[in-house]
Length: 176
Image 1 (cartoon, rainbow, N blue to C red):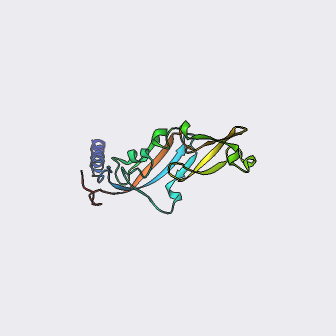
Image 2: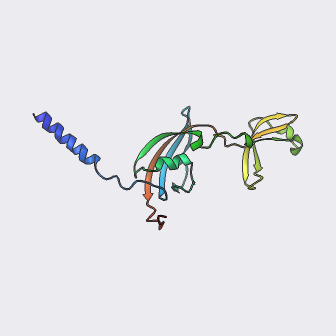
Image 3: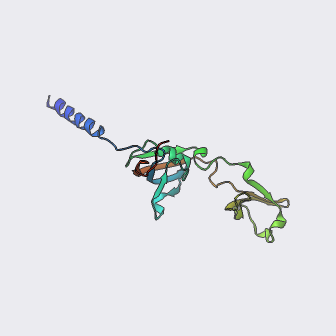
């Protein structure tokens, strides 16, 4: 009888603890601060927020971070942690054959120094932004350069912890 009463008390306390409000859930328009750890499918560490001097803070819906991270934090509460697998589309996208370019050898005065796997800086023709390409092949026809993100086509494991949520109402954003 004592064991049943004790078990009932423990279960009641757990129920009360679990029913405590977790605070507001993150939603589109809220500003959130997170910590994260990103690993590749093979388990190797790709990136983590603790390597940066400033916290990772973004407004959900503004596409300031990977779309998969935005989707992950929606509905999370401050202090909550999730581990999710981001598809390539939710991470750095699929590899796009349109982002591979064969550049004639005569565009490179020192073309003989280029090797497969080398990083090659260039300017995006449309935006004039600095981009990095990776030399895929060097041949008599030219140099094949891949301007896709190095992780295009890869799935990523993300461990995300929400550290702070500032509700959009606190930011002065009105619902439309």
